[in-house]
Length: 80
Image (tube, rainbow, N blue to C red; front, side, top):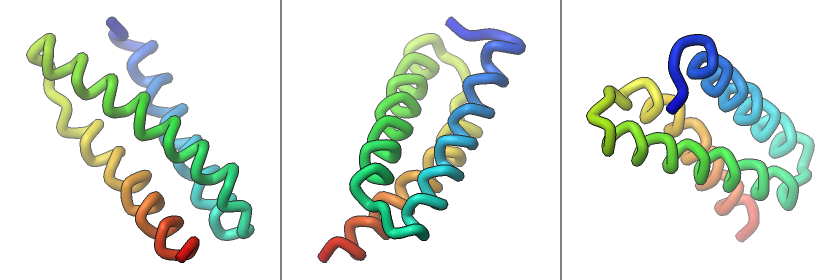
């Protein structure tokens, strides 16, 4: 379980990875952007499940996961 400073570091890294993902998508590097986005989503969903299991609030994490989900749909639409 992550608590205190470790918890904040996790969220900061998730935000940085999502920002990098958006930057890569704008630079038209969709293959790497999709991999990075999938990693962010998998880690975020795993943390959300863990938080729900331990009866912790996951509202902020859910809000943070909206951006990678929107990016995933955008990358998917650009790929078609």
